[in-house]
Image (tube, rainbow, N blue to C red; front, side, top):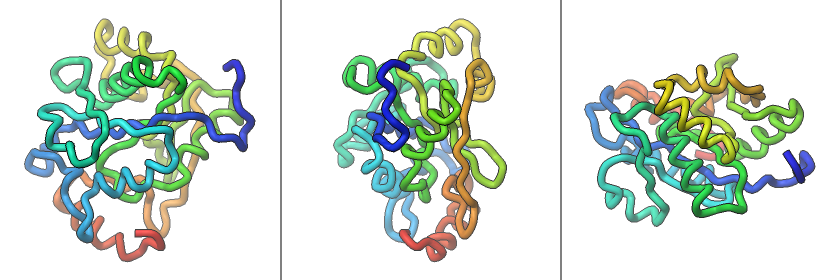
Length: 215
């Protein structure tokens, strides 16, 4: 891209927290609003991600008033019938294009990852620039986490076409069209991308808090 910053410079990036899931395995409702060690999962995500970004946005469906205390823009999926996280990414890209023309990148993260790394954005950009890649995603324990990654705002129309016209739903199918860099984190003592999907995961997250230097 033109005027690409040096690898040690901060790239303006908007954080998009994907909270649009139906949480069926947790009995429905907003799993990100459940508490771990007295603090909601969403509060934990925002506290970790906020300092890394040039603004934050929530992607969530239903009544946005339930997130009012966070004082953040809340944007619903632009595609009907809950097509998955790609729709949340598109919501973030569209909002950024309309409201933050100074920002060319968003980082998407899951709202159910309470241990998000505090160097996420910096390391993803560093990996992207090192490979001259189009996108970048996170990795831990040898496994990629495509929901957690960098996206170019300029890709929004291509993503919309893939979602609406082609019916693409899996993130891997979309990212396979581009050159993708990965940034890897250790999964010990705690995997930073541990996500809370089930009641058992919630209990495990409560246990893992005690192993963090910065809980």
